[in-house]
Length: 78
Image (tube, rainbow, N blue to C red):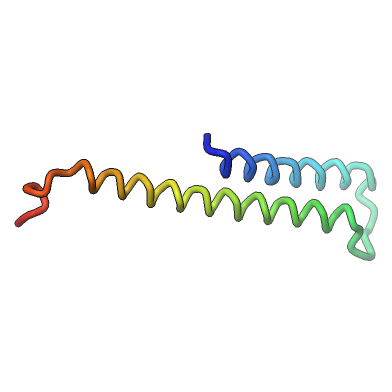
């Protein structure tokens, strides 16, 4: 796993765990305002998801470029 994927997964899973534990802690009470813990948890989930998305796109581009270099030029001609 690359660093981007690792960081993204840690943030994504950490945010999910933070929100779930906070919901359990609140005892399913009605939330009237956005608490800082909820904002941090949602932010971590969004940042983790974006880091994963960017990492996957970068990896796909790198693999495509490598594959094009490995394919012989003769095979690309019609």
